[in-house]
Length: 125
Image (cartoon, rainbow, N blue to C red; front, side, top):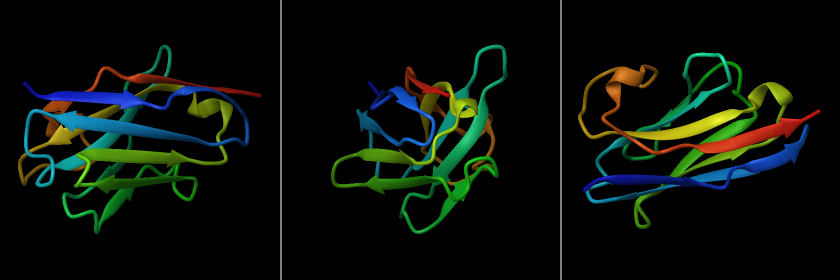
């Protein structure tokens, strides 16, 4: 059974930092692309960042570029999202997702097959 479990969310002041982690179990992680998405109250879920299976290429939404960094440790089956200079508009539930195939756009929800349960990030002003 495939499981993705996010951790590291919480409450932080604007300008602060958080590091999210997503641990994957139940399948081969090292060949999968991984993505981070978020959903704010009353809004649709949106793409945040993604990383190829090798870790050599990353993708970011314009709204987080330069502030967030996605990385992975294939020896630990874990993907990370380092979030710096947080803003109140970053408040959302953050989800990690896994794409075990070699196709599809990194930016689209439909590309990803497996999803975590989400972790809440709240940024106060």
